[in-house]
Length: 131
Image (cartoon, rainbow, N blue to C red):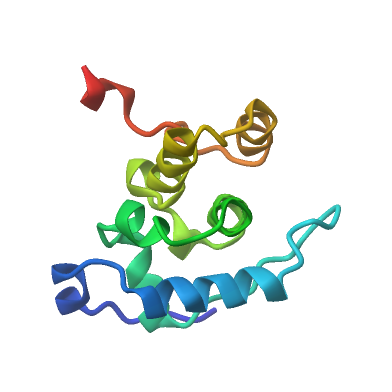
Protein backbone atom coordinates (compact mmCIF):
# COMPACT_ATOMS: atom_id res chain seq x y z
CA UNK A 1 0.00 0.00 0.00
CA UNK A 2 1.24 3.47 -0.85
CA UNK A 3 0.27 6.82 0.53
CA UNK A 4 0.07 9.76 -1.83
CA UNK A 5 1.23 13.19 -0.77
CA UNK A 6 -1.18 16.10 -0.89
CA UNK A 7 -0.06 19.58 -1.89
CA UNK A 8 -2.64 22.17 -0.73
CA UNK A 9 -1.04 24.80 -3.01
CA UNK A 10 -2.09 22.69 -5.99
CA UNK A 11 -5.72 23.47 -5.14
CA UNK A 12 -5.28 27.23 -5.72
CA UNK A 13 -5.30 27.05 -9.51
CA UNK A 14 -7.23 25.57 -12.39
CA UNK A 15 -6.41 22.43 -14.33
CA UNK A 16 -3.83 23.12 -17.03
CA UNK A 17 -3.61 22.01 -20.64
CA UNK A 18 -0.46 20.06 -19.71
CA UNK A 19 -2.34 18.14 -17.02
CA UNK A 20 -5.19 17.38 -19.42
CA UNK A 21 -2.61 16.12 -21.95
CA UNK A 22 -1.13 13.82 -19.28
CA UNK A 23 -4.61 12.43 -18.50
CA UNK A 24 -5.21 11.82 -22.20
CA UNK A 25 -1.92 9.91 -22.44
CA UNK A 26 -2.97 7.79 -19.48
CA UNK A 27 -6.36 7.14 -21.09
CA UNK A 28 -4.63 5.98 -24.29
CA UNK A 29 -2.42 3.58 -22.34
CA UNK A 30 -5.39 2.07 -20.50
CA UNK A 31 -7.20 0.89 -23.64
CA UNK A 32 -10.61 1.96 -22.36
CA UNK A 33 -12.48 0.20 -25.15
CA UNK A 34 -11.68 -3.29 -23.83
CA UNK A 35 -14.05 -5.52 -21.89
CA UNK A 36 -12.38 -4.97 -18.51
CA UNK A 37 -9.86 -2.13 -18.70
CA UNK A 38 -7.43 -1.76 -15.86
CA UNK A 39 -6.76 1.87 -15.03
CA UNK A 40 -3.16 2.69 -14.17
CA UNK A 41 -2.47 4.71 -11.06
CA UNK A 42 -1.58 8.34 -11.73
CA UNK A 43 1.35 10.22 -10.26
CA UNK A 44 0.52 12.12 -7.04
CA UNK A 45 1.20 15.48 -8.71
CA UNK A 46 -1.28 14.66 -11.46
CA UNK A 47 -3.82 13.30 -8.97
CA UNK A 48 -4.25 16.76 -7.42
CA UNK A 49 -5.67 17.99 -10.73
CA UNK A 50 -8.75 15.78 -10.39
CA UNK A 51 -10.29 18.20 -7.89
CA UNK A 52 -9.15 21.39 -9.61
CA UNK A 53 -11.73 23.67 -11.18
CA UNK A 54 -11.63 24.55 -14.86
CA UNK A 55 -12.21 21.18 -16.49
CA UNK A 56 -14.98 22.67 -18.61
CA UNK A 57 -12.66 25.41 -19.89
CA UNK A 58 -9.81 22.98 -20.50
CA UNK A 59 -12.18 20.70 -22.42
CA UNK A 60 -13.22 23.32 -24.97
CA UNK A 61 -10.29 22.53 -27.28
CA UNK A 62 -10.66 18.74 -26.98
CA UNK A 63 -12.36 16.56 -29.55
CA UNK A 64 -15.56 14.71 -28.69
CA UNK A 65 -13.60 11.44 -28.71
CA UNK A 66 -11.04 12.85 -26.26
CA UNK A 67 -13.81 14.07 -23.97
CA UNK A 68 -15.45 10.66 -23.98
CA UNK A 69 -12.11 9.00 -23.32
CA UNK A 70 -11.55 11.19 -20.25
CA UNK A 71 -15.11 10.56 -19.04
CA UNK A 72 -14.49 6.81 -19.23
CA UNK A 73 -11.04 7.13 -17.60
CA UNK A 74 -12.32 9.11 -14.61
CA UNK A 75 -15.42 6.96 -14.21
CA UNK A 76 -13.43 3.72 -14.12
CA UNK A 77 -10.49 5.22 -12.23
CA UNK A 78 -12.74 6.32 -9.40
CA UNK A 79 -13.94 2.74 -8.99
CA UNK A 80 -10.46 1.19 -9.15
CA UNK A 81 -8.47 3.74 -7.10
CA UNK A 82 -9.73 5.18 -3.84
CA UNK A 83 -7.60 8.30 -4.26
CA UNK A 84 -9.53 9.20 -7.44
CA UNK A 85 -12.88 9.55 -5.66
CA UNK A 86 -14.22 13.06 -6.14
CA UNK A 87 -18.00 12.81 -5.66
CA UNK A 88 -19.79 15.79 -7.17
CA UNK A 89 -16.42 17.40 -8.00
CA UNK A 90 -15.48 14.62 -10.42
CA UNK A 91 -14.12 15.88 -13.75
CA UNK A 92 -16.77 13.68 -15.38
CA UNK A 93 -19.42 16.28 -14.53
CA UNK A 94 -17.88 19.28 -16.39
CA UNK A 95 -16.71 17.04 -19.24
CA UNK A 96 -20.25 15.73 -19.71
CA UNK A 97 -21.49 19.33 -19.56
CA UNK A 98 -19.25 20.23 -22.51
CA UNK A 99 -20.50 17.23 -24.48
CA UNK A 100 -24.09 18.32 -23.75
CA UNK A 101 -23.37 21.87 -24.89
CA UNK A 102 -22.03 20.47 -28.16
CA UNK A 103 -25.10 18.26 -28.55
CA UNK A 104 -22.82 15.19 -28.49
CA UNK A 105 -23.79 13.55 -25.19
CA UNK A 106 -25.09 10.14 -26.15
CA UNK A 107 -27.65 8.50 -23.81
CA UNK A 108 -25.64 5.28 -24.25
CA UNK A 109 -22.66 7.01 -22.59
CA UNK A 110 -24.91 8.05 -19.69
CA UNK A 111 -26.00 4.42 -19.26
CA UNK A 112 -22.37 3.25 -19.48
CA UNK A 113 -21.36 5.73 -16.76
CA UNK A 114 -24.19 4.61 -14.47
CA UNK A 115 -23.29 0.94 -15.09
CA UNK A 116 -19.64 1.53 -14.16
CA UNK A 117 -19.84 3.74 -11.08
CA UNK A 118 -21.27 3.94 -7.59
CA UNK A 119 -20.78 7.72 -7.54
CA UNK A 120 -24.36 8.98 -7.31
CA UNK A 121 -23.33 12.35 -8.77
CA UNK A 122 -22.29 10.98 -12.16
CA UNK A 123 -22.84 11.96 -14.87
CA UNK A 124 -24.81 15.15 -14.11
CA UNK A 125 -23.34 16.40 -10.83
CA UNK A 126 -25.11 17.58 -7.69
CA UNK A 127 -28.66 18.18 -8.88
CA UNK A 128 -29.58 20.02 -5.66
CA UNK A 129 -26.97 22.64 -6.51
CA UNK A 130 -28.87 23.37 -9.74
CA UNK A 131 -32.10 24.29 -7.95
